[in-house]
Amino acid sequence: MTLKGLIQEAWGDMNPDRVLGITRGMEPTCYEVVAQAPIEDGFGAGWNGPVWNGLDLDSMRTMLRVLLTERFRLSAHMDRRVTLGYVLTSSRPKFRSSDLARRPGCGAFLPDDGKDPRISNPLASSLLTCHNVTMKQFAAALYGVFHEAPPVADETGLRGRYDFSIHFTPPARSKTLPDPPTNDVNFEPNGAISISDALSGQLGLKLRQRRMPASVLVIDSANETPTEN
Image (cartoon, rainbow, N blue to C red; front, side):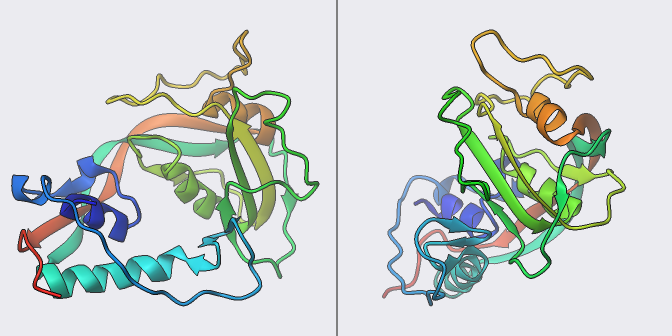
């Protein structure tokens, strides 16, 4: 990965448009990071909330930030800027309250009934299952659904913790946000399901576009090459 890519990963696979201060020297050279992180027992293979194959991604990213600080002398801070994003609102919620003993998180794993909805509709190939999450946490999970990662704010008014699963067609890569979703659920003739239609039809939620403040990462300084091993 380039230094630019490592910085984006260290702050949670951040949208490159919201990483300020990247220089040309951070992009041409690729690096391989070889490291060992603690593995949590009992989670098995695949995703389980924020844990992937037993590795807590938040912990891994914290370790990566320390590495970049030490080896590239990276100095950075978070700031706020106004950008175009989405707000998540509620119409007729279609999900159940959670067993609060479950570990909170969302991931690409099967729902509790073990049935994979993608088998009957391969075009709706993205699957997101959440356990014990608030709507604020779900809005944060939706942040990564779009390739351009626009901010998503929770305005559902729902205060509980919930379990649910949603499947949809991955949004196309684009330099602009998708067209504003309509109030109607319209499934494409070929079986494709947009994220906005999936939210409305499967969960009773809606996405609406709005300009809003969003977090940006500001690079204050960094060396373009690391110190020696």
